Amino acid sequence: MAWYKKIRDLREDTDKTQTEVAEYLGTTAQYYGKYEKGERELPFSRAIQLAEYYGVSLDYLAERNRYENEQFLDEDEHNLLHNWRCLSERDKGKVEYLIMELLEAEAKRKEAK
Image (cartoon, rainbow, N blue to C red; front, top):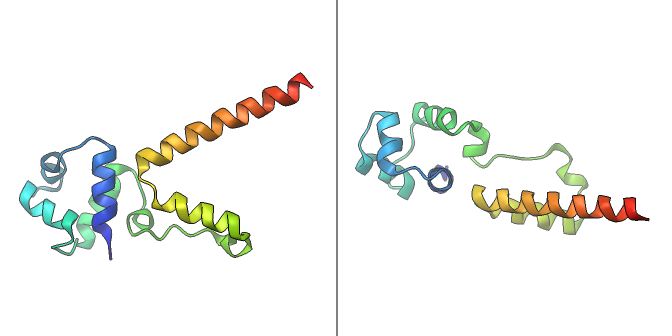
């Protein structure tokens, strides 16, 4: 599994150091760094600890976030979802903020009519 990309993104997005995460896991920064580089397989028990640490699911860490109705998406929606999944957590937050601003602006336009 390619946990390493996701755990690195989560750590960076929460402004944590490898040392801080390693201390939580009870290991060294050097050893933890090997997880982030994909040089060591992340044990399931550590995956559980990291999911709890970041407040995410194991499916999220494993990038197994699938939507039941994904098969009903049109091509544009599918591409948008694919692009969303490629974003870091920080960038997803930025996109969510922009969407909320657009929705608020749209609601104001509708009220003005």
